[in-house]
Image (cartoon, rainbow, N blue to C red; front, side, top):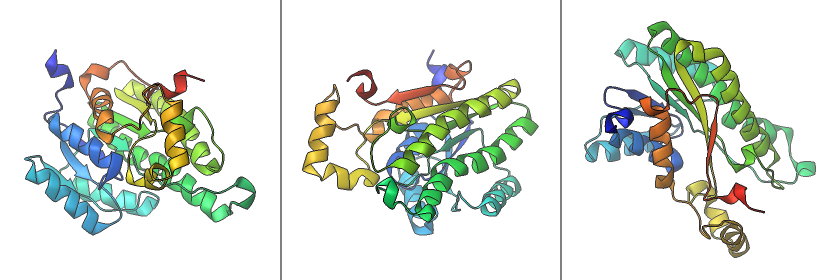
Length: 255
């Protein structure tokens, strides 16, 4: 049974993985035996994350590029091709947040969030899938959604629209690529203790609301998403396709 979750011999690209949830996903997959490719725009942060993983005995390499730049994404995959690196698992994790009332939201800020959180998953996913299809041995694509794939909150309209789109993009990818042995699913994290949420964690009112509205009465931890990522990356999920798994402590289950 344990071999179902063994990722030995697989190579995973995780976007936005120099820190936060992305790094946790990379570490979880590496601990399950995968070779991991770390991505972010910041070259120094990528190198630091790679060094940390290698220091723990994992096979890691860096690939800095901007996930919103179609030409940069194509060039990055061409570089992997030239190095003989074949991506079996893709986790589209890169994301940003911008909080503002909708009536005050600039179009440029809306577009920036949509491009980073949604369009990038299409761009990177397409490049990865082309190669998975050509190789003929399938693959795994995991897109990172959110509680806002299902429920809305004030002041995060572009993020909500993007994460709702991620849920449906995963289903569209599954509909087209399942015939090639590619499974595409979404992970929907709840309120997790990450750099992106530092301001909220440090806000006594918001912190109290998160704890009061969640059955667990606490924030989630990045490492608590590792198991779901490993499951969706492994043979154990070969007949799971087009789904979204919320890892939220039960937040969406209560009123």
